[in-house]
Amino acid sequence: MENKKQVTIQLNHKSSSEEKIKDDRLEDYIREHHHPIDEGQTFKRNYTTDVNPFYPGKKQTFWMKYKSFILSALTAIFIGTFLGLMILKIFIDMDPEEVAFDANATNNQTVTTASGQTEAQNNSNTSAAGSYQTRDFTFFVTQAGVFSTKEGADQLLQNLQVKNIKGMVWHREENYHVFVGIHSTSEGSKQFAKTNFPAESEFYSGKDWQISSNEVTFSAQELAWLQALEPTLEAQVSNTTEPINQDKWLDKKPAELSELMQAMLAEIQGLDALDNEQAIQSRLLLIFYAYENLSNE
View 1 (spheres, rainbow, N blue to C red):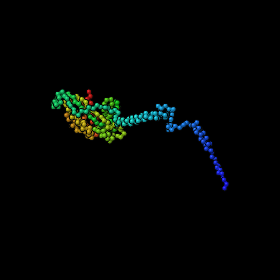
View 2: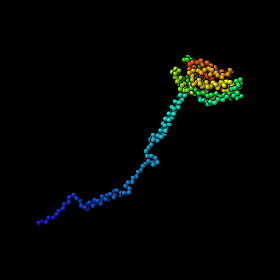
View 3: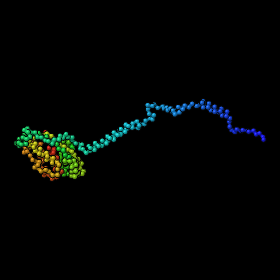
View 4: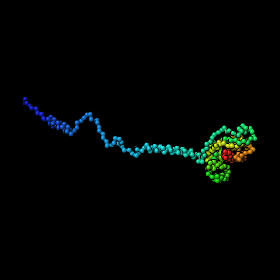
C-alpha cells in the first residue's frame, strides 16, 4: 500500500502573524488620533452661550414687554366707560336745572308767641306776633320749560294758553320754571302728562320738587290758620281730581291778613270752582308757590 502524504491548502487566509501586525497598527492609530474615553465623563455636557445670564436669551417683543400695561389700560377704559354710561343714564332722568335743597324734615311744628302758644290759641283778641316753622313738602311736577328770564317764561305761558293748557311760573334762584302739573308720586305725574298733554310736547314729567321748611313770623291768628292749611295742602296734592271744599281751606282764617297771607288766599279762592284736573293742578302749584314765599322778607 502506497504511503500518501496529506497536503493542506489554505485559501484566502492570512497568517496569524500578519493579523497580529495589523491589530497592533490599529491600536497605535487609535492611540494617536483619539483621546482616551473616560467613563465618568460619558454623560457630561458642556453648554456655552454668548448671552449674558442675567438677561433672557429670547429677545422680548413690544407686546411681551408692555402686555401688562396695555391690559391694565384697556381694563381701566372699559370700567370708566361703563361707569360713565351709568352716571349719564342717571343724569338723563334728572333735570339739568335741578336745585339741591337742604330740607330740614320737621313734622312736629311749634308755635312760639310772645305770651306763649296756649295763650295765643285761647285768646282770639291778641295779635302778638310769633314765629313758626313751616312744613317741608315734596311732590312731583310736570315742567314745560325753564328760562333765565321772566320774559321767556311768560312767552311760553302764552303759547300754552293757546293750546288750552294752564301753567304758572315758579321763580327760584336764577331760573324761571314753567310748571303745568303736580302730583304726589313720580309715576302719577308721568302718567298724567302722558294722558293729558300732546305727544309732541316736550314736557318733563315726574320732576322731583321740594319746599324746604322755613321759619316765618306772623300774628297768632295767621299762624293758627297756616297750621290748619298744611294738612289741607297735603290732602289736595294727593288727590287732584277734584278740589277740596272751600270751607276746609278757609277754616280758622283771621279777618285781617298780612300781604303775604293775602297772596296765598287769592290763589285759594276760586279753587273749588274748577272742574278740570289740569287747571286744579295749576292752581295748586300757585298756592304752594305762595306758601314757599311766606318766608321771603
